[in-house]
Length: 151
Image (cartoon, rainbow, N blue to C red; front, side, top):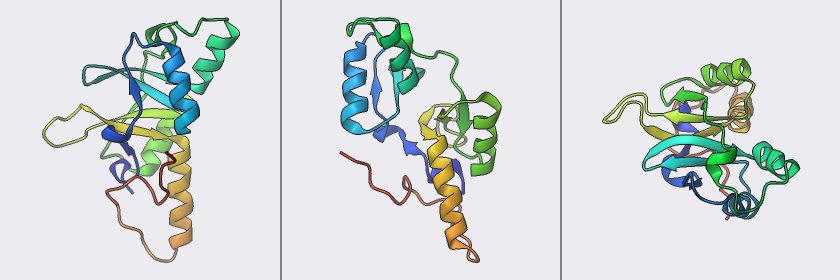
């Protein structure tokens, strides 16, 4: 399975602007059941805020008006949409993170922000492949996994 077959596509990724307050990020995470929010400047991913970053901000006694750019991770871990599931898993292991920004591997805008994957997404794909054995699942499904997103 390619990353493009199970990533959360760009139009379904929850995002904020660098100047948005962490109050908004907390609301998104709590109400949409997500563990990370991508920080966009225009159409470019410039950072990511995870539950860990929010916990750290709480422990540092940051105010709810603190801006996303003040707590976001700026050194983004990225994968290509054309990578295999196992190649993406190696990236998570190498960098010790739980989320990666997906960049368009081919097409009209290679290198553009295409979506988001988590270690959970990779693990789910491994389980689905093991359930499918001895049959082979398609390498791309065109959707984000078999489970609907909670709204």
